[in-house]
Length: 144
Image: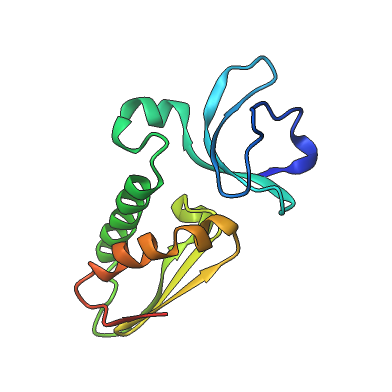
C-alpha cells in the first residue's frame, strides 16, 4: 500500500480511475510492479505483484483474474499444510489481507460457510471472481 501523499505524479491520458490496474515506478522511473489504483482511499495504490515476481510468472502480469486464482489456490494449500480445517476446528481465516498478498481482502471460514470482508474497492470490483475461486474449495457450501 502507498499513501496518496507519497505519490509524486500520476501519468496517463486519461488518468486512471478507481479500480484500474496501473504500473508503479520509483523516483527514477524504474518499474517496481503493478498495483490497483484508488482515487477515493488514503491508500491510493495496493501492490499486487512486484516486477521481479511478475517477470518469473508471466501468466499473472496485469491479470487480476489469474492473480486471484493463483493467490487463493496458494492460501488454500498453505492452510491445508497448517492442518486447517481439522477435527479440532473448522473456523479459521482463509485469506489474511496483506499477509496473503491480497491487501484489502479478508476471507473467514466457519465450517462450510465462507464470509468475504472488504476494505478495498478492488475487492468489490472483483467480488464475483473471488467467489468463483473460493467456490472451487471442496468443503465450501455457501459464500457471503
